[in-house]
Image (cartoon, rainbow, N blue to C red; front, side, top):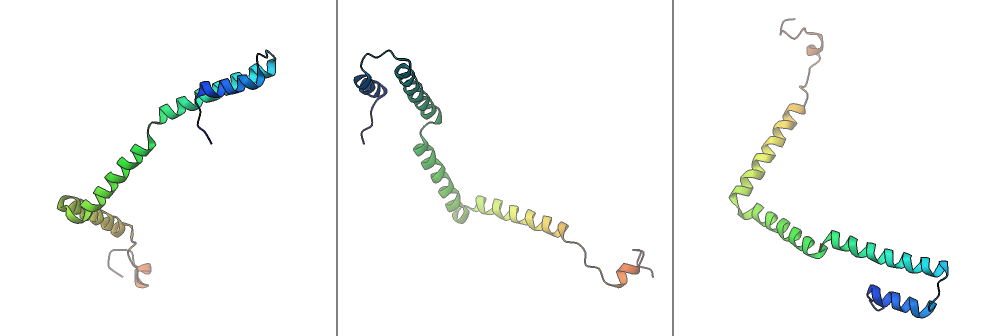
Length: 109
């Protein structure tokens, strides 16, 4: 399968339809031209995905490596884990005994 430029595609279509000025032929040329222009603009807007992927992959690998060898990153992870533990402690309800159900909460019976 060959990859062709917009001009090459339009020339190929022109060779098939000749100098026809029928509405259907002109509409087809317009649709193909507009579609190729739109595709090109979308690709241009999206940028180079391969480069973006490689940069993102490199950054994540570096973060992962730093997790084991960089003490600052390790301390940051430890602090984050401590925060999670505190949140869990706050979310855990106090265990009540059977007697606690019938007390007024003052410790007196």
